[in-house]
Length: 318
Ligand SMILES: NC(=O)C1=CN([C@@H]2O[C@H](COP(=O)(O)OP(=O)(O)OC[C@H]3O[C@@H](n4cnc5c(N)ncnc54)[C@H](OP(=O)(O)O)[C@@H]3O)[C@@H](O)[C@H]2O)C=CC1
Ligand SMILES: CC1=C(/C=C/C(C)=C/C=C/C(C)=C/C=O)C(C)(C)CCC1
Image 1 (cartoon, rainbow, N blue to C red):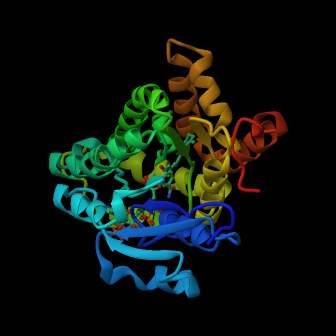
Image 2: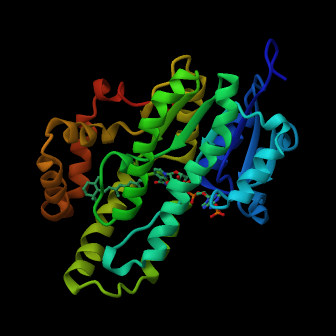
Image 3: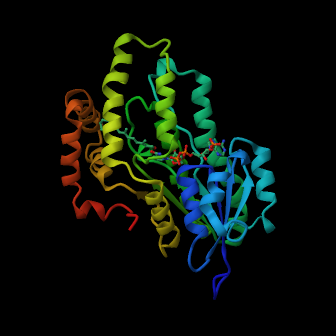
């Protein structure tokens, strides 16, 4: 136990892989043992990777519970099983992606994305926030995305789910401040996790019912190769995002918005530079359809542009 203070109880959703798994392990391995991590996942049969990465912290500073963010009962049972329902830091990480022409995606699949990414986060906050308000203490972290700030073609529904989160949190943050409860959004760009592999597997299986030949061609032959280039050029590791998240938790005055990738700063700045929206729409159009084949060069220029003054606006893992 940390000397001079109680351990903080941190509950994290979606710890079977990727960013959630790495945050759980990083906090559980804290040298000063400042955290007791409750790592949760919807299917405990997937626990092996986490248990292995947690090593000797498993059963000490890290415990494992089952939690499906899409189920009222599962969320309630999990939180009720925590001693005194006391959670100091809630990390809403669970999320799913969805990629492709809207015409080819069923309404049910779209609703599943909102059910997990948006309502899953809301369900967690609704369950944990009242106790934090009573205690006049707590920190809620939400894994948003750069796609919560800027739409990206063919990610229409995923983007919308993250915009919904941003709007919800922007509204909540003001009320929570009155109760001394902090709320922070983490906004990563591309991160190499199963999120990327699952989406590419889904794309390979897709048959594009309802989409015309041109749209399918723009998606498969223009967007997908550019997106692969972008992941290669800008991709961060889940460890990077875990380190950024730990920094936010440990900050005495945590920021509300936390972009983790400085290479996205110009894209977000562009949105606010032109309130008509035209600059963003046309720049994205040109980047994809006119300079898509030059994406490698475009990315190099972007890297040069993101000098240290822009980097200061992001949270870095180091
Ligand atoms: N990778 C990226 O490029 C980026 C990801 N993000 C966000 O980061 C977060 C984590 O994603 P990432 O680590 O990359 O992807 P992963 O696919 O590796 O991890 C997603 C996690 O969410 C879990 N999950 C999905 N549905 C539920 C549910 N109903 N209840 C509980 N857990 C669930 C998955 O569990 P299971 O194994 O059971 O499916 C898995 O543990 C997401 O919110 C994502 O939107 C943000 C920006 C970029
Ligand atoms: C920037 C950019 C593109 C793609 C961005 C991608 C692919 C971002 C992925 C972000 C992720 C995966 C966020 C997860 O939440 C395009 C449209 C190819 C071309 C124009 C510039």
